[in-house]
Length: 150
Image (cartoon, rainbow, N blue to C red):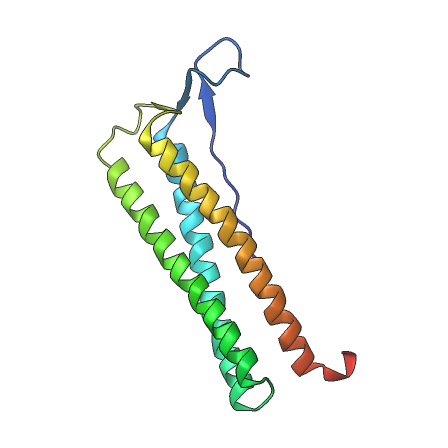
């Protein structure tokens, strides 16, 4: 599974680099993370769509029960909805940030930074959920493809 990474660099405008009270965040750093997250979300979305197709094929072939298929399909649809919603949230953030001068830093109390943190938290939650779904899919797929090993 492709994992996301937050590359945010926070520049402290103080002599003590551990003190974040006067920290300044530069918008290109937020923008970088948004770009990275959009690529990661696109990957997770496409992978989820492919898993749904595979599960549908396995169900049509009678390799998995209707109950298992229905449950997994619902979980994947929930995941895809969350991905689409998060992509939309990132787009809104990017559009709003476009009005700010790229060289003008913001502080940690700024709404853009708070929104950034919210999106980062949602990315972490979605990464965990995606990992769980992928493990479940891999188990079922291996069980069908290599039944003698289970």
